[in-house]
Image (cartoon, rainbow, N blue to C red; front, side):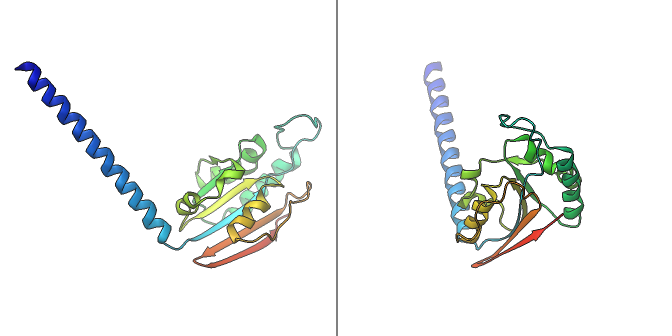
Length: 183
């Protein structure tokens, strides 16, 4: 008798857990379908990391130079009046250092991303109705801007360009990009 009760209890638990997983999967699928049909309305600020140390050309992950740290402070001054909901950085120390003052100011923890996989429907849904700051590199930021606006408009940035800010505004089918120089 005890074995039958134990078996019934196990079957009930397995059945209950299975139903819960299915409900969760179904509700997650419904949430994705619901957000993917909602038009995107978001603002994206995209910048390249600040000036890096160039004393060792073989260093794949150099820190910011003093000039770069000063630029990082200027970025914090620039973004101070703006509401920022998310900050995305690559795995490199120079992107983290570039945005460290802004992250402190906004009390946000930057999210590490992989440049060639960031742009997706999931990313657009996650940033919908938000203002997002993205820090990357001379060869990744223009590519991401192009994906956000849906056209091949921008080439790679010059390796000495640390002052260009791309502001992409998406409101449904309307996609606008501004380039701003912040010295």
